[in-house]
Image (cartoon, rainbow, N blue to C red; front, side):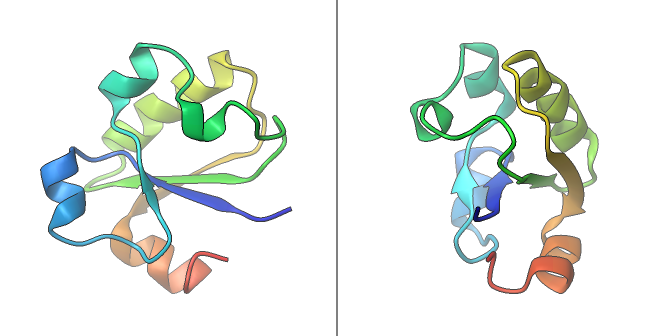
Length: 89
């Protein structure tokens, strides 16, 4: 099962640079309900979240847990995720 990398920063931050293959889902989007990009994903899919400092990704992880996801990693920031996951796969 592939890892999904989620950049939880705002769209303008994502546009300025992000991990290759990452999708952009800000916390406000998660607060509105489960986003379409994740609706058909198994609940045990590894989701790696990152932002600038780890705060928004921590909040987003809690929201995703409420939606039933069980394999969530707080990757902290773009540089940590790139170092750990390379190209996102």
